[in-house]
Length: 353
DNA sequence: ATGATTTGACCCAC
DNA sequence: GTGGGTCAAATCAT
Image 1 (cartoon, rainbow, N blue to C red):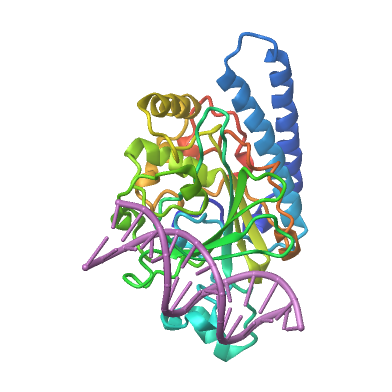
Image 2 (image 1 turned 60 degrees about the vertical axis):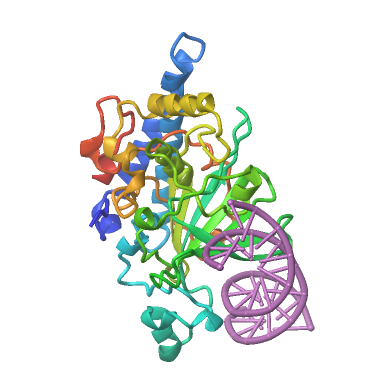
């Protein structure tokens, strides 16, 4: 069901060879980039090469991390399809809060409380870091295709900025227990770290309400009501995918998915020129890439089942050490399904298929 | 009037 | 005891 890699991926692959392959590939791309750096080559070409380099090294690092993880297989399905998550070996806790037990009778963690030691952090989480860019006068947003309602904000010790807490707008309608936390990073106020908890049981496309954003600040605090146009959904998705990290705390697994359009956002796009610019930008970047990757933002239940692009496996101890630099600026992602790859697609996915 | 956000208080894991 | 997560009343926005 949309998983890109077999469960026994680690055991089956020749990890060392793949790591070498990725590093070699990255080096080759770097050479190509160097050769065209001062040339007339298009910006897109250069960015593709840069992303190829980043992706190669990301994958190499991922494989190194996995190799040290005792063969543990991370969850492979990214967050936009939380209901599709398949983690049979790690209990999925949707709502760990004792006080919010009004609806969690249906969820596994409720059983966990009876069965054994139930740690608060034993819950499936995804982390997504989004860079908000003002380079071109646009503000980004943290929209991910779902409707969220803010239910709290808290100053976090040691953090410059407060953390905002959101739950699915349809928590009570669809018993959707998905939540997320949004927090600006100390290092870069333009980068938001979004932690998703629990899985959506609602249909994002069917439930999204319509209300355009009023201000960038609204987005920063998690504007919940926005119905992007179909094309905007691609940007929305791209923002969301910009830097995705998935983890199950109890299994000490994390998956990272690097994706970004440069400054592609629609949080405060209120004039058509800007919007057209972004569309062109997206088109340029996605030209030649998987249509299934570009367009699916409006079908929330699908567009994440297919991916699993850049994976990074971390210990729980690494969770707090997520860096933004390596993952927030990746201008491109690649489709998980090699069949979707265009001939232009620069990345060697041989290790993943 | 209705729904979203803010914010102080509460609960509980650590 | 402290800090993080959540609740819920008050407030705000539409």
